[in-house]
Image 1 (cartoon, rainbow, N blue to C red):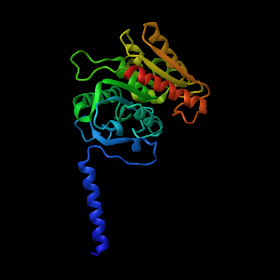
Image 2: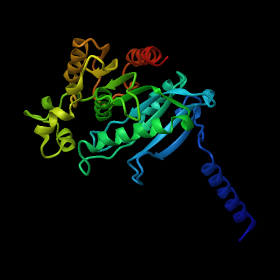
Image 3: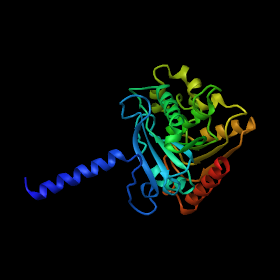
Image 4: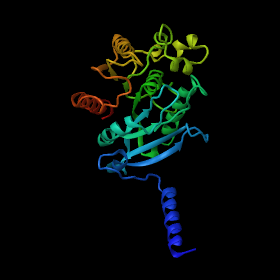
Length: 295
């Protein structure tokens, strides 16, 4: 073996060793990227399995690496059958969350049609339990948590928030929810001339009977946490009426809810695809909400 090859192996083993023994590892890209602003622990198994779908990434603000921080729990979209915790939405808004002094736990979960309701919901519960059990070593304040989700992830986040754990639960209810264009009432989208086939697959063969127990709107009560809801008026996947209904039901029982409709936006916008004005509106509203509910 040549000396050049020896040096290659030495460099490789050194790099692997650093990765193994570092709890958090920063991967610098540009100065405002999520990785450059945070210390990250990737692909943490949260549910005592070896399933790649039951993993999370945790990002901790570099400036707060010795302190306990509030935590945003982010759940990705993808029609319950696709998607990943590493996506455009997190790349877009993850830096905003970190700059607000908040850690971010991004969760993957099992997907349909192999797994159906309530498997995905149970995965979120398992992840929440993990975060609560390991809060001290992860340097997060689980008592100050905020759920953020988009599309299918917004449904899962809203469902978890509106079904608060009982007094003996190992994890607390969130202090707030940011919902991007999520489903809230399955009964209104699984029937008719153009049913949501992804929703049917998620609910399973008995989708009609499962619509109510799977719908977040079923569990609204006056003790529910405050909501910030975003939806595009041109969304042809999840109609804006789903967010309007959630907003109306929350306010009817006295829960704080803010609905921000993005005119002309379609489904799946992260924000930057919209006009500069709309993108700024999204950011400003999220910053204000985070500061109000977490600090």
